Length: 507
Image (cartoon, rainbow, N blue to C red):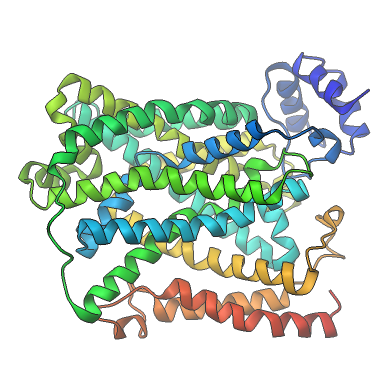
């Protein structure tokens, strides 16, 4: 029986075929009642029971067409074209004092840079059949890769609370405060939970179509708010102060798409091994870039306009980004409120993939954690970030700007090592069968050493509200140089350390 027919039988509800199929295709047997229960749900109604184990090539075998790559692009576009990205755009004029033109140019190149990095990591999904941070074991080693898992959990849960918070603020503002922010947060969290719990099939279907209503209401926003954008006021500051603000905003913007890198392969892991690597890279990079820029440019426009529009400024100061968007739609009355509701609900498109990755990350912490099925971890993740979002609902702006930069620091260190490991030491050759072999994977001494050195550089060069590194303080009023310095130090440190590790340790 072909693997396609085997898995067709699962979709039709043949529960008895679950265990037989898993044995024949090399998938681990259910080890407890929870996993057996999830397998039955998979057979009956399509709840994805598979966890972090490698996806066998037999399951993934099929002919790729141009539609598959368009679908890949669409998924990434949908995941990034969401209302929470408006906040990142607003930061250019509001927090860094940059003019409209400066903000747009910097935002564009920063987004492209971050998207290229994530596009590279996504190509490992079809090649390996492994989740992203299982691939990280080949560079980071068995134990240090757990550090990446913990950091990525912080990313995904952090984005979960931010997404829910933005959606809650929007829904509350639309209702004139009649609906509390807490209720709005719960609405977004529930939508996320339903799709994530069912898994990759529902995830793909949801993301395939959700972009359309979002884009439509965004074009409405361009029409109604565009005339109020400030296209004439130049960037504030001169000399080192201005350059420092430009650098800080560039690397802050780059941190947005970089945050996807630690989960990028998770969403394309079911594609066949024969998937064209360059096409995967292009679809990922293009989808992220186009999705983020469409809405971030709008955020920049709103940020520039609120500095001159008293109503916008008052709304933003009182209730944040949600109230600002509602005020921008205000001339359209009820239809404007409808557009805000669409934006709020569609924020789930950004939250779903992160929560999906978080559920897998919990399993990657170790064998005892892996025994708990993915749907249960997705439920736990949703509950966790919902509670945190409710508790932190009055501090969105500070949370967002500080959180995003920290994400960029560690991901750029890991990506730098991954590129060097593939092209200098492995020459593109990986044995994907040993992904769970502690005795064959690297110990990770070199990677951990380079990781620490990179982080030291990031701390010395970071420019955040809670801390300014001594090197960052030398540029104007401060400039966030943590990301390029961390990458540079890692690039210098990792190759000799890895060479010594291979020479004296052997793997």
